[in-house]
Image (tube, rainbow, N blue to C red):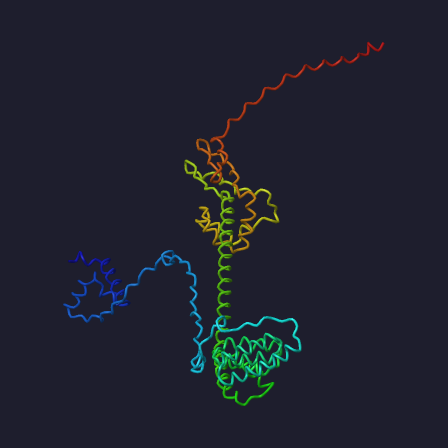
Length: 435
């Protein structure tokens, strides 16, 4: 037992108790269940059990959080309710006093034209008119029409005779024939009140309310007839309803025309946008196809623990690009695009994401002249004796091969060239030679 309670064990236990005093909740840990039960058995008071805490879920990586953005569907235009013209308002149609239309081809009697009318024919025509009026008053309308026709053959220029025959047709319940004769009388004399009145009454019998109102008002302006006032009240009430209905139909027609114009404009705009999108995609594909390899080479290690040679030099400048046209490759937007793996893979749809940036567009347009072909990297530096050099260069073009390992042997000194013999110095003259 004494062996279990060594000073080291007691010191560790003290440290453990200190931790429990600071964090009593640890006592409720699963791996300390045995210790907790021991304390309970010897009558120790335990701290309250802590409330269970929800385990914090590990944060999802950013890539997992980001859901692929779905293309927003085009907003569907709400279909406008179709414009339907209202039906003819109640009370604006024909009433009980209206009669069926007559067939002018069957009942109307034509009168041939006459260039000149003698005085004798004019007098006879007036006599026949009087006779025809009498017959009409007796109610023999068909016979009276025959007499009026004979009078008109003698003098077809008499507007009153045309007006009387129109009145006779109306009484005979042939309103279309009456309107035809009244129109002829008005052509001969626009102020023929009787013809205007008959034409208005005949139009009323056919339910042509607007035509009826127009002619009855003109007749009253020339020769007021109080007997027509009741008829005018009926006609004007009908015209008012019809006028409102027609205005509504006119407004509806203008609105339909406006909608149709807007629809065509939207269709044309959509067609132009699709065409421009296709053209832009084609340009981007051409740009993507014209880009060469990107700069950079991976430096490799050298055998034997020495670091490798120098990495390949960055790619060359595009052909024909001057300093003033060179895009700033350190620009953050350009760096972002250059590091996009989809762009590096040459995917046109990836490049399209950056098409709205003018700096990137300028760079791409500059590259169209020849891309950015990578220059071959500098060759790896020569290794130490017995170690190979590192290969340099960029992807696509191999760099120059590394220099051979080891220092070359020192060349042997060249033998000195043989020197030509110096000529012997001439002997100094002696004093004897001077004599």
